[in-house]
Image 1 (cartoon, rainbow, N blue to C red):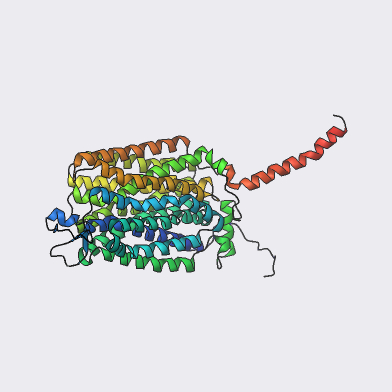
Image 2 (cartoon, one colour; image 1 turned 30 degrees about the vertical axis):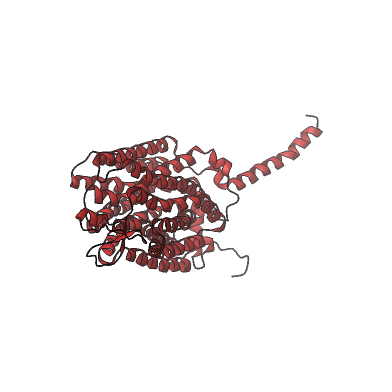
Length: 497
């Protein structure tokens, strides 16, 4: 085709059932899955690292190795060190990831918005995986301090993952398919723990806790190569996408997908719908991350499950959440397409399922003493969180396809702050191993956060595209309108009218 020639294509959903946008969706879903495997591995491995499973069974040797600050497990077949870390130290180790994670959120949002998310995503997955493989040597050499440093660096690199994913989602997800595709991508973050936690428990029991970090790190590095080879920033940047599919995506987004200009910070900072989404997502993310890091400890110390059972039971709520993400997301698109409910009300309805039902389950968990019922309530509380995918988590793309990565990064920064504070506050509240009363306080606080975050989203949330999404185009039209009015003003002045 000659340079400058135009292709005339019909703007309609492509006939092919599996298109390039679906491949990109799978790549982003796999990235979300992989990064959550790498994020949660320490939450399970720390049970083996600190010998909590042996302590509960009365099999640990308490002789301290002064040079390594560790003890060997009597009769252990793995030969792995067991570290004598108290609850406060474990809280620091588990929260250290979020120290680095929150630092890079907003810069990552701005950079991926301006330069594209594909290469940043590839780099983030690759570097996080390499750091995960280096965690056991860090523990051997420098104890908990080096582990904290390693996890903090993992947080720095992972800080680019979700801004990159949201930036790419905003440019690859056609509006009529947005909830479904977003559900597939975001649902994979719960599938990560489904696979990672029982597998980690099995690896700790059979091969020792270092095997968790070596195997997960190797998998992540291989996956990063797949993202590098097959991914692209946007339809315009993809080499083999059909003209028909590219036109369909760009037309439904109402944008030619040119690289966005300067971030309209003033408009974002004064937008009530944007802040409703940011704060709701931040508080829910903080609750989710707290569950993610401390649930294995709760199962081990309060419900008294062994390490293999711990991994399986930790995975169960995330498996339920992943399964529910499909009907939640697809039904949202279905009812909106048929006009049964507005998109704004659909976002609020599904988010309320997530936060209200989940919050009630957390509240019940704090007052439950039956082990079986506790597991059921735990499963419900996390399982229904997937209703937030067609709720607040898809809302960023509604408000601003061009800057959704940026405003999501602000929300994720605040969520990471909660991730730092959460495990430390729990270690302050839960000062006695296995105290049901102290854990009750924790769950009541988490439930209150869920209720409050949903309330402000229901009051101020919106799914309308915000005027500042195309702020430069709006300013250009306003300038042109003013320029066009100048001749008329000149004529009136000349005529003396």
